[in-house]
Image (cartoon, rainbow over all chains, first blue to last red; front, side, top):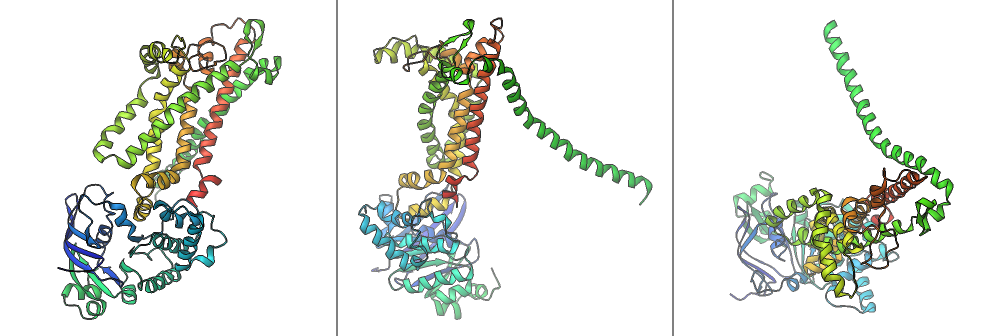
Length: 253
Length: 307
């Protein structure tokens, strides 16, 4: 089975203690597209997303079986070194969590971790990615101010820039606009549509309209099972499964 | 509404209002006790303050109560020495311990180590003193001092500092563990997702975010250490001289007060001098408490971290 997908999931099962959170998930995430994971709350959307960069590890009592291949490497192989996997993915969480340091240091944090010490290069990286996240104009005169002073919308764009600065190929977003006002959400959505030229993007959302605006590919999860997946138009307009249809029409939630 | 139920109603409302006032009074009066103690100490130490200028009281080495000279420097220095040694020993151990408990320890381990540390806080201080006399003092006399080619009785600054360090462990460990656990997991995830290792995340993100709280925990530990009396008194030697090394005896303020109050009251002004010593101690502890409170409740510094 030859595949060049960045992310390929094979028979993934996740347990939280006795709770079987994800059941036999097998799917390929298409490259350089926006894949949106939808489903009612508690169906395992976030768990699936976090399994892609092993962010389930810090959770107490979690057990994972099956395989997730990132660029052909099984990241659940016990011999794998996890930091280089995580470096391949930028993460946006539900609420932005700026690191407790200045705006500049937030962006420079990742590159510094991976050994970049040259001040000029760091300056360039910071400017470049703040521009990519369209935050540069708003913060260029206060780069040394604490990041926590930015508005929530600005913080989320800062987190986007921070994630991009380590040079990932993949962007993961866990309901990345749920804490934002409509204007800031729009801002983030626009960035995603630009970024999909260069990045593979996976987003979890419970907003159907957002799915329609962004998705190229849709996964529908229900009670830990992958019910249906396929190109956005097919899944959203002509779902094969009864359950998907009901969810999209708002009967189950 | 009948006459009777109107009465019941009135009584209910009366007690409702009265209970609030009563509780308020109780709270105020316990707060007032601090002021009351401070005022008593101040007024009772006035005779010695009138006799000798404040500067010489605080900075003179001359302690000869029978000749009427009260220089508190040896005692103030003794207090500072012992407290500094205790904190120098306690801070690294406590921080690393709480990092392990909060960040690495599996839940099971946490469940049995926490009560154990709690017990440490509950041991009476005289027991620590005896343990110090039986273990720490001989250890210093027979092993540590010869290692540095000094002779020491073992009753010294270091012994006091070591006993005191163990006594503040539970307070600092407990508080800083709670503070570390209060750092949101998402913040750790954000750092891990950028490819940071766990240790890099703890060092650069978790500790940084928790720093104001940890400083407050340490300051609280200091203010406890400053006032600890019995255990320190039992191992520190109690010689009213300026200690020159860790192996010299010292005489901290609380020990001075506890040893002499009620004993040598025939000497004029002695009683006033001891109350002045208590007053200094109270002010220092109050100062550290206020500092830790300011750090915890959003001073300029913590706003940098919390926004």
